[in-house]
Image 1 (cartoon, rainbow, N blue to C red):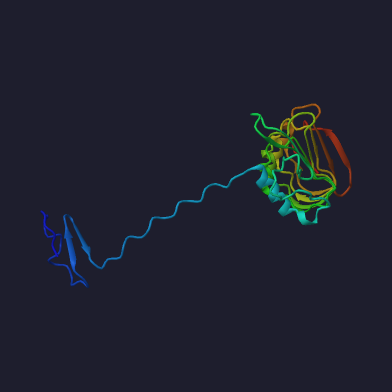
Image 2 (cartoon, helix red, strand yellow):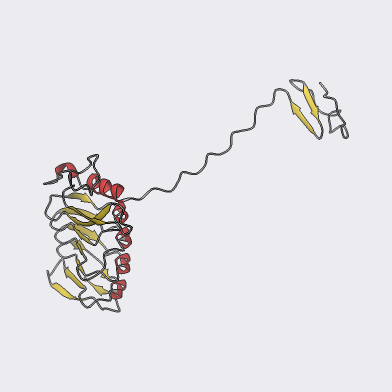
Length: 231
């Protein structure tokens, strides 16, 4: 079937093998009437994961057996974690910098029967100035995402993970928290060396407390090392 219009040279139609259907001849194009339609375009890549305080708190609850906590009042409820009328246990909030709403500032879950691993989504809680998950049954590695908790800054800031069963190396990313007030990691099952990045801590009040696993030799000193020290 030929459509009206000017055409260029035969386009190879004369020597083409017999087909299983008619051909529609268009300018510069020969298309089989029985050709399959072109494949659909490839799907767009998924958007990057969203990170928010609520996502971080939900992930922490799920990864540390929240149903078995000694106190999980308010957690996973529809209320905002910073709703003062329906608070989430252990979550303390402060006003947002722009004055609109509130955001988590302290997470106090020490001795609350947490078990399991610390999820990487902990790094979503970037507004925290104080984090205590000591005296629990946490295991696995300390996630590198703790280095994203940039608000852990100032003399009163702290990261307390002591008296758990955490293993592996101390992540060097913790060294990014250069103004952290206190870091306690003693009474765990950590191995390797104290990263030299911890020497980036600048404040005189910054204290790293560790306990050597085998000899139980306690170390408590201002972090100002320039070379890795073995545990």
